[in-house]
Length: 201
Length: 103
Image (cartoon, rainbow over all chains, first blue to last red; front, side, top):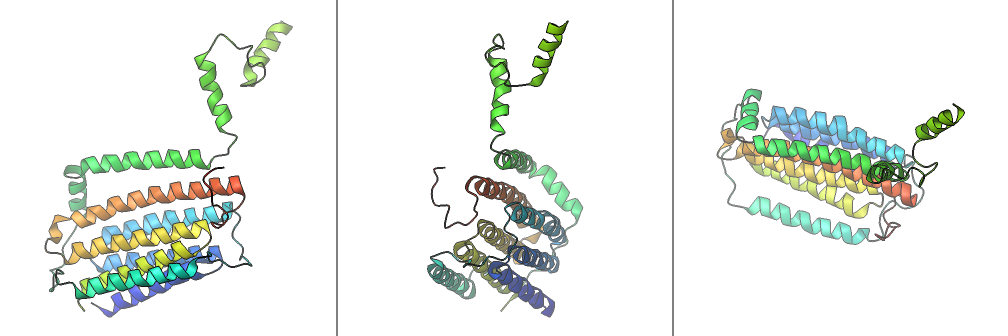
């Protein structure tokens, strides 16, 4: 356990506390990025370089930006005047203290942990790629599917509420093709123009 | 204290901080931030057990963290989309005012 690991851990935890307790949401998101960077530095010191760089790419690069975008889209970037805590925050703090006491007691008193640290493993990107492409190829494909579904779902959820109405009308149009007169002006302006042109001709 | 216990304690503390934020803050985005911190602490646990466990050459904890990060990214995208949808519907992202499932 080196001194640098302790310093990184302290910085990470302080940034996390700041992210959870600052009143301004934009400051909070920035402290969250600092905290993620600290976690990435901890990964680097635990010989998990690939995970560390993935953490920087995914969390600092993508998720922090996503959170800032969400803050700006919901117009909550300014500091609120009223209280930022929920009504039952005291109970929440109590439950948290209980939880940490339990976790810390379990970690410090467990006899199942290996005492002597093993030799640092040497992991190359080639090893990771081989594992991902041979033993874990099915989970990899499933994760790809889950990411696709989540992306489509996020777009569908976050797009405007008026959007489902035009999304329904092409399906209705294809389901009953012989009634264009049922919706005279509804779906697309192109048939109306075509009708007008035909009438003019 | 050996390094594994240190990493587990840091992870437990990070989890507690994230949990405290998720249950005490009023803004919906802060709740998601707390959940992200909790997920990160779980990843830190996995990496610590992989590094100091008996078989670090098996790469199981390592690969598990990679998959967990991908799922966390999906969760964050869907969660923030839900926050934006709720904000558009109710004009607020204060969780004390969003109490009912019925629109």
